[in-house]
Image (cartoon, rainbow, N blue to C red):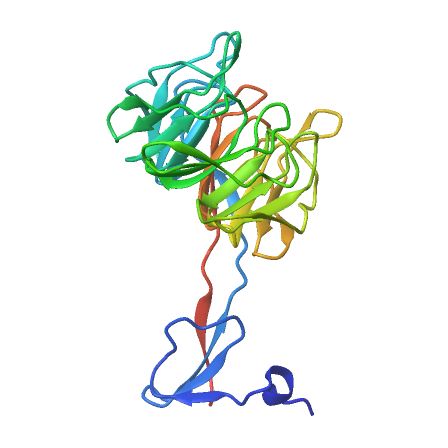
Length: 319
């Protein structure tokens, strides 16, 4: 007969309390409570409808978390806009506009401290960089290279990473709150990618020309890692670190908008539940367990919230 030790390599742990951070499949006996307990992690994430943007748009910037999101810039089907909206987990509210209207712009940070850089402003690309302090936008030092559809990662308006961009650029720049500095390039030049993380731990995935390529950034260099399950461009991402990322939406070969959602665990991508609305040129923010998707093409105001339950500790009946 196969025993627990045969399978897991250890006996059931005996301890006076419950572990603070149990792993999936861990079993222990709590001598204080006289209980046999186990931890299971079988999360099944799903998208659900949230409150619509006030203005339907595509190719916009994003920052924040699921319950405190920020949307800015973009194209509403008629004009390039400078509108900024903030999300409280239920509804969007219009707040102070960007100083410069643009589309294909990139955003990073939080609802109280964000950065908007690059984009397209007729008749060409822009290097404009604006900082959000929770109330208004202020123009700061420009990017070294003007470009649109840049991948972005960063924690707030003092720390950001600008990755690739239009023309299949490999350029990577770091923002320190005062100036942009050129650093080591992507291995594969591209634009229209998804990105997530911070300046010392970022992930760039997908992009033009419809690729599944994924690269990991350690603060100094980019490293090729395992590809997306489905090659696409014009997708969005969410995640606080390069070990835990969500990729959603986008466009596959043939210009088909997709609802595909994939989850990155630090090693591999796995397909999970689809968006309710297939779209590309959308914006995304949040985390792997609480993500936010909004806007996109076909031009929409639709907002969706991704939620993934945490694991649970269960007790076993010994009678």
